[in-house]
Image 1 (cartoon, rainbow, N blue to C red):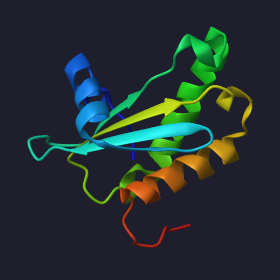
Image 2 (image 1 turned 30 degrees about the vertical axis):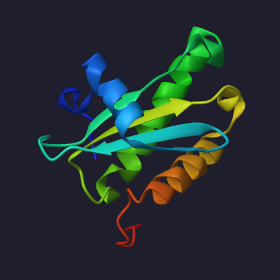
Image 3 (image 1 turned 90 degrees about the vertical axis):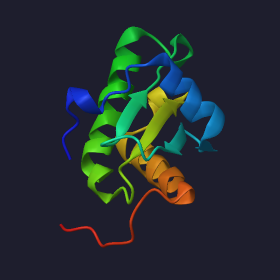
Image 4 (image 1 turned 135 degrees about the vertical axis):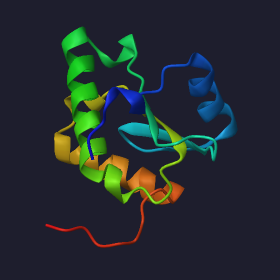
Length: 121
């Protein structure tokens, strides 16, 4: 799945709505929040990186890694009409890509985001 600009969350109110009214699950490296919204045409994604995560290059690296995870597994999201917010936790900058991906997938599964259809190699 590509993540074109139209899939980016741009309204501050959407961030707060997903965090306040939606479900959230916290893992070792990421916090994933989601809120179903039937009015949306497609998935809206946000990645929030704060200065607590480290220097700018660490935050940029985390954003790139999480965007790559979303591109890999975005097609498996069962109901794409939703808001999806991913927040890396402090210490995640030192985690490997595989650890981040495993943790994100675990939280997505706990939230019931992923469909049960098998992945194609």
